[in-house]
Length: 231
Picture 1 (cartoon, rainbow, N blue to C red):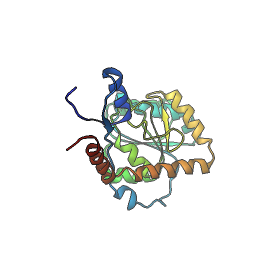
Picture 2: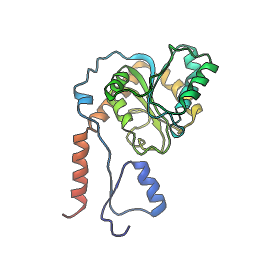
Picture 3: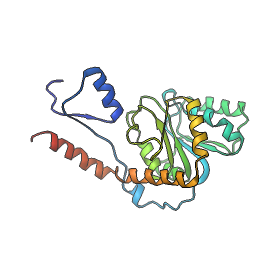
Picture 4: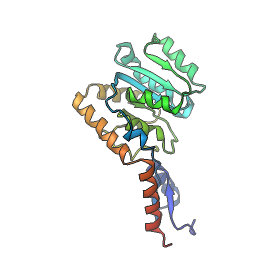
């Protein structure tokens, strides 16, 4: 470790965890990923959002807690305030269906699309009001950035890969990983917010995504290396 000139971390959360074990490093930087510019600049931002539509994109596996999104939204689904679209495959799809059936959530409010193309993912995000994934051990989570570029109100996990990019209450929200009660309370808060406040958060999310394109992140990566190492 002492022979390393410069450390790069995929997120602030990973850096914090690493330094809590091995001590503070002299030189380090954050090596974020970026999204294609076409996801922002060739996008029709006038696409109508389906009010109350939640989108989840990711594997339906334990550490991502997809079922917790449904559990948190049950009371709102029963009132007709929300709907959920799951994109991705995994063992927990059966559990999600069981929870929905037990709580009498009909097919109009719950959609499991399985694996779809990246283009189709963007189309689903473009019509979604919310994007929620409160997973644990998330290194970065490119799909959060894609959701923000689509103007979704994005909810990620505290102290995970996207904490630091999302500023809670500014360009999105943060929730305890896998905590359906915390998420339910957060949804209640967001739903009750005035539309102009929610619109401001959406616009802030888009502004964040514009600064995190593939080109800009590559340029930053190169700059951080050059600034910290004598070539």
